[in-house]
Length: 286
Image (tube, rainbow, N blue to C red; front, side, top):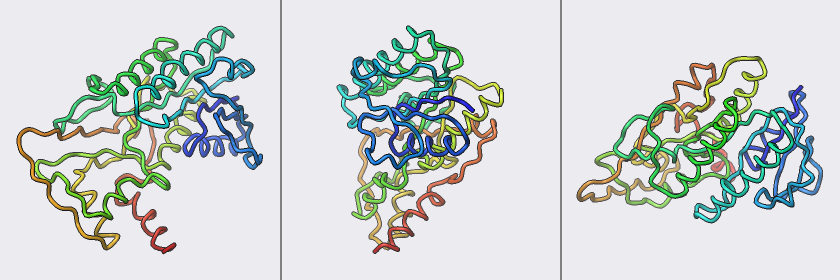
């Protein structure tokens, strides 16, 4: 049994906490606004990580730490509060206590700046264009320098119940770039949780882990293809080709070889397998 802290207990962190608790681990979930009804079988610690005072009473005797905090918005201020101030507060708290806990840090494929359809993996150049991507990359480097056992997990676009941006788009017959193809990368929320639980079990079994894993499904697909298929499944009007003039970004394509070689099997290896159940559940409600 391991003593585990999950920083950020939203949809992914909360589900991970449930799974690890059922496996017999001692789990604490740190959340700014935890539920008050006590319905979860693990302990909550209420704190805003951007406040050092909030963290004063936090136990530091954890063996494993997951950082799965998501920003309330994509603006620079929110990212700095989490990935600079908040992370610095946590590192300071645990370093001063002499903690030897190993971390799993959830990052994003936004740390890659490639946008011409290139394939990227864990060894690809990281040169993000956005300020938020640069803040994520700086946070990654801070943790890997802190402890070589810390692991970075870069998720691509997360979808699942409650994360239905593309479904909403597909309902509106949007204008979408068709040629040249603009690629999209995604991972189902279930596989996000699955990969984090899998990596922990590998570590506890003594298996050597790499410092970084790119977590995305098997099928980077053009946005036109994805939205066209979704519209068809929901019996909506198809998207409209967007006239493209001049050079345009094509995004990147993410490889997941490293996590699969380690032994993880995706439950939803492509967008069709992942979205089918979501669409069926919505049609059942209507």
